[in-house]
Length: 206
Image (cartoon, rainbow, N blue to C red):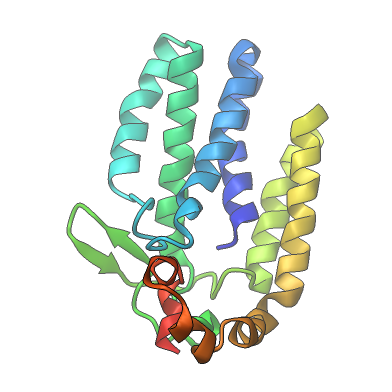
């Protein structure tokens, strides 16, 4: 699933808490947003493996959440919703597509790496690929209550993220062709090893 979908999910996880305990509302919402985004920072360094922890994030999030409910503080609330946002991101990527350059072709059996079991989890493809029409529909559905409820900077972040989601969906299927022009085999093979290490494997496999 695309990044805005994950960001909205993290915000939506924190929204009920923010409404119920407004003194920690901003901390919960910002942490949920950052947790929803965080796993995809591994985009160019072992994507869906380096920072995706479907088991460990889930265990930590479930462990810290009761503390945030019973003894709320800035630290416990932020930690709980960051971990929950990262956990849901890591888990829901399993229900999307694989890691191939053109995920709508459904040729990859890798969705998210399970560090606990030491193996890749195969994609379910309920959302066929990041930026698919159903992914955009999910983003819009998640964004709707946020747009109604949030105010100020966070609301504008939702608006901007929704704009990114719309544009990304519109261009998603032409991105591989653009990537092939920009990262042709000749260019990739000429890159120094330290730089080549950061080229996603899907470009090397084509």
